[in-house]
Amino acid sequence: MEKQRLATLTLDDGRSIELPILSGTLGPDVVDMRSLGKLGVFTYDPAFFATASCTSAITFIDGDAGLLYYRGYPIEQLAKQSDFLEVSYLLLNGDLPTVAQREEFDSIITHHTMVHDQLARFFNGFRRDAHPMAVMVGVVGALSAFYHDSLDINNPQHRKISAHRLLAKVPTIAAMSHKYHIGSPFMYPKNKFSYVENFLYMMFGTPAEDYVPNPVMVRALERIFILHADHEQNASTSTVRLAGSSGANPFACIASGIAALWGPAHGGANEAALKMLEEIGDVSRVAEYVQGVKDKKYRLMGFGHRVYKNMDPRASVMRETCYEVLRELRLENNKLFELAMELERVALSDPYFIERKLYPNVDFYSGIVLRAIGIPTNMFTVIFAVARTIGWVSQWNEMIGDSEQKIGRPRQLYRGSAQRDFQPIEQRG
Image (cartoon, rainbow, N blue to C red; front, top):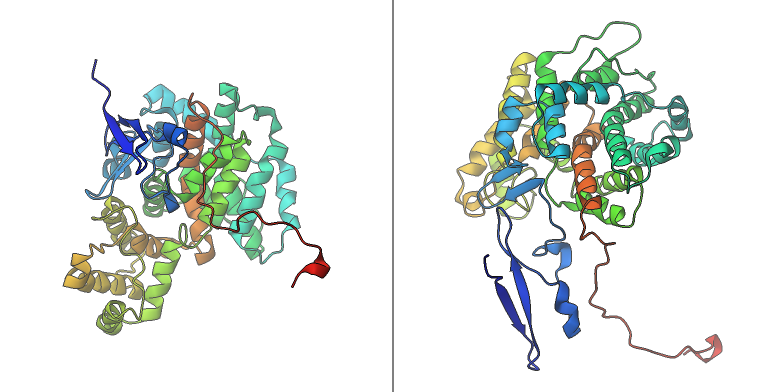
């Protein structure tokens, strides 16, 4: 049996403590700080830059090497050889399905895509001009009021049913949010369509004519969903886990994740990249804009990543997908795409960006693809939420089954007033 490795922390007053060093399958070792409180001190790590908040077996990222694995499978392989429901099964269950398991899983998800009829009327409580993400937060959170027969989080079967319901119903709610916003009738799901085909049908179909999914658009959205399905302990996933640690029901937890994703620093990056390209306006202005970025006059959106210090492994897949979609739609001379290619070329040949490892990330291309497919800008983050739901659910389910799981309770470094005595208002200077 391998001897436990230890790190010794010694304070300046001579007190010391030995802390276990833990190793994962991949990635850096971590120092177990749980017993540090015995010394009466705690760690200080704003934004958790160097803190592992949990043990997980779902997703691995090596930002320096540009690696992203789902359950050990490289994201590039899954995006090119799998589809979203198969990846969803993998994230939720730990292994790729057999033929029989896949058929059963597809059938379950397909037959859970309908939502309660009263839920459709729930939309009428929102203004027509409400942002679709605002509607998503409210409606997904309200699912617990409609499906309260599976809310016992300590019951594995209840957790399984809730996971299936969320994976199946969030795309339906997302499409309904879009239809409600534009004043069009809801399109209910059809069992003959695949998961992604169904979503596109509910988004763009009308009662007046038959809808025929374009296989290139379907494949593009499949890849977008796969690439965004999970991303380790990011802000929204950490929010889901923290909410779930209190024992909150899964629908409330996923709604909390959607709320966190709504923040422009998290889920709005592809929209920001698209707006940047529109602001540049023409290929002739690219060199000027790049210089403006170096002069701190402009921000370069869609380049670099907090985690990836190398190429974002999702970006190359998204770049290839972008070409496929624009070719299919005969938009090879699309102004935005030409701009994106020229900006990428100039930035990646400039020492300023090379030295800072500012490579294009997945958001740089995904906004162009979504625009080409016909997804309106206000639905970009909703698409992200649809894709990330399976990651949130898988992480939540893993956390509930973790024997070390406790309610989250971060510490703080207090810098407010010391104790002071209350004075009546007439005695205050």
